[in-house]
Image (cartoon, rainbow, N blue to C red; front, side, top):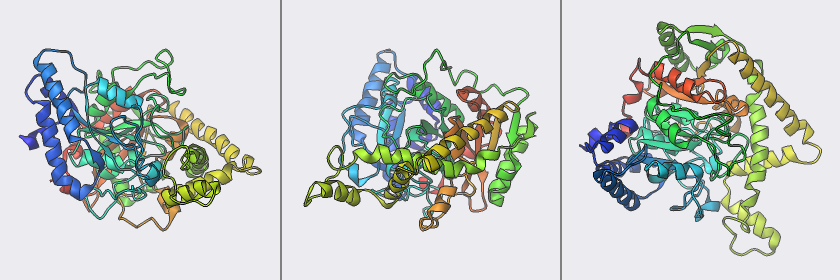
Length: 492
């Protein structure tokens, strides 16, 4: 029974709980039995909350038994990245500086999950303050890829992706600043969606790069991603960048999910596919062939400023990070050094003791880019290039309905393979970063495996606030394949 429950999708489980075929308490028991079996190998969670989850599941079962109305994710176990504030648990950002921090409120997306009667089972590991491409930068523990214990799960939302791939949650939330949902989704063989900037409220998300961050879902299939978007998307007055319903109404993302896009035009940049490894390139080409067999037209396009995305991103993101992380100083928030000689040491030693190397590197890069005499040369210039990258997307979408490319140049790499060379690590996000600079939505969909049985992801972009179209295009491919139902070895 437990395995049968774990193989259900979010929607299937939601429907079976609603009609009484499965009790929510049984689903939560199955998930925690799986956590007991797989978590010692994968280490996706920083904390779990079994007692609270069981109590909420019992409440949901009672509501359903009484015929009371329940939400659209009633009784479904969901995990959350640990940089999203929750009032019932610590929010550490996988950093020693926030190791004991307890937020006094829930993030907007947590309120939405609770309103939908989802059951939050735990908080997931990440690269410290969401800075990284492998989750190796976590200050608290190391998460491994459920497909191979010697390889990284991707980053920075590696714990959230690994939890879903490892069948320890039916869905999860991550945050994506430069690819932090799509890249780990690709490495772990699950679906990961970065919504349009402004589509999901960032209220309660601990900021890394404020003009780039976006919360989005991990699921095992595209339909479940649509279901979770129905819950978390929408206007929130507490986030000044949240777009109103008047300007961009939120549709029902599940309503037409199975309707293919007629006359679909897919834009590709041939040199992008050539820049990936042979096996990633073959899997993406095979995906395009699937779309062609469904009647889609492949159109070659050019995106000339895409090549500057990595450099532009690391100026803008680090500049914003240096400002956002200034509050973690041992006085306002976070760890305070034990025995300072003066007030200067309170700040300097507190931050030195508790921030990891990658966070320190990005704070210093950002501080330099914003410093007097260098602002025009770095931050201002990067902002201008960002506009040119946005124009790349705008011009492309005048010719095509969507753009497709790999998610990452390679499949999941081994621990330590890139840690000594930050530039190589940064280039792991070369295909994902531009979407954050442009603010458009992107999704990673499993599209095959390499010769070592590691998942490959196909990345799809559509114009801003067209997630409905994006999900329908992704669903067209998914219905022709079964890559998303294969269970990784460490989950068995």
